[in-house]
Amino acid sequence: MSPEPSEGGQSTSQRALARAATTKAWLEAHDVGPGSPVALVTDERLLLHAGPSNHPERPARLAEILKQLEISGLSAACVQLSSREATQEELLRVHSQEHIDQVFNSASSKKKGKAYGTPFGPDTYANDETPLCASLSTGCLLSLVDKCLEKGDGPRCGFAAIRPPGHHATVDKASGFCMFNNVAVAVRQAQQVHGLKRVAVVDWDVHHGNGTNDIFEKDESVLFFSLHRYDSYFFPGTGFVEDVGKAEGRGYNVNCPLDKGFGDLDVAHVMRYLICPLMEKFEPEAIFISAGFDAVRGDPLGECRVSPEGFGWLTRGLYRLAKHYCEGRLFLALEGGYSPDLIAQCTVECVRTLLAEVHGLAGPELEDPVPATPMSSLPTTPAMGPSVPASPSLSSKSGRSEGVPAHRPLLVPDLEGSPPASPSASPALSASGRKARGPAGKTCRAVRKATELLQVLPMDVPLAPQAEGVSKNAKRNERRRSRKHSEEDGASSDSSGWAIAYGGDPEFSFSPAMRMVVRQVSSSSHTSHDVPDMELPPPVVLPRAEEVATKEPPSSAPKSEEKAEAGKSKQKKKTKKK
Image (tube, rainbow, N blue to C red; front, side, top):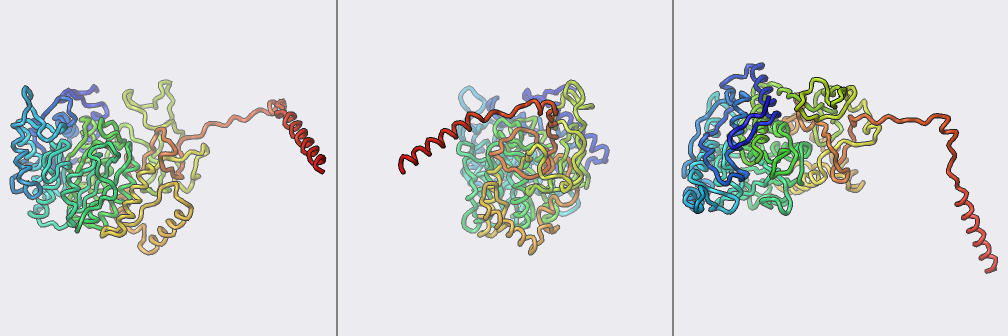
């Protein structure tokens, strides 16, 4: 199977083709056909918004997503909704009239000799079709919300494959490739047209959703949560943990800034100690996801390490929370992500996960699943279900296991046998003395600080565990608090957000909670946890008895002579003094 070219000169990777083929076979095996209660909305006219050929936000992003949804069979399995343009009245619920006029007049800002202009700054272009595409992008999400919130037996969740994105757009300014704030306009539609009182927004784009943050910073009816990369030179430079909202909305804006390179286990830690407790406390009537996929490993701008399966894992948990609190009202809207092939794979994972959850099915296994490891001693991730047997040891000279396609990258070490049946049956550390990697230390500190700030605000949630490096007294106090909390409130209760999201069925093999991450990680930069190491220690070669007998201990004569002479000189000095 060779890569297929797509629009814009992009090609679909072998991994993406394998994912699509496996997903299609899974749909057919479970008879998941057209009319499933998951909605999908898009419009091919959104491809007309175009600028410089090397711009990250280019039509090839959406074209590749539509292609992979088609070849995977997901487009046919979902309910296809009609698109529409957003009206002036709908846009005015969030944006100023001046801003709306500026977007609709942006087609007149073309540069001389070029088909586009940059009226909103050097990074945000506009062409003749930008006003139409901006209105369509918001209107598609509105169409999804209207359909899923109407009474009847129709879909209750869905995905909006739209562009341009929206979470950087503020009330009166377009920036960061965004024109209108699609999610913010849709939230107001859900509240003012459909009568919802409490709405939650989860933004997992690698860039902070500063526009959505500012729009709802004084609104206690909207819980905004952003999980993003934060450092001094990364756009937009906002979203620090102390930004918790203003006035009546103080405590309803929650930001979790993470370090460059965060991955699946960092996301799982945030989900466990922030997102789930917040949803449990807030009890939303609908959940919106600003689904940017630029935190995926390989994205040219994000430089992080979340896997497509990790985004599917997040979708699974959020859908279960939505099903428990708000009748399954979960709406995903495409934001960023600038590797067309990778963001299309992430979209396939999210849409497939929605279908699996709605029908109560287990997800498919891809060509190269990563063996699960028992992680019940890891405080940041769930320990659920039996462990998946490890792959057979590598026996071929080429260094590949039997039955593995030649193009497939090896994701697991050479293992012999299967993992222990339970963590209690194995030591905390392997014979090699290594510890399995957990979430980054900065992730633990950011989550801990966020929970500390929320303790004195309306959205007070339990404190997250301390990162490594704290004092023994702090650790002791932490254990006492957690013990007291478990006795009073029941930490293992099925009513907790974490138990609702991941405490039922066994994890599918791609969950970051069950994955063995195989890469070199500095022990000083990440938190370690005492979990069994699946890599076998190297064999210990004992010396022969003859070698031990022939070896002579190193001579210590010179040192003993020096000590004797030093003792004599000290004795002479003492006698002279006397």
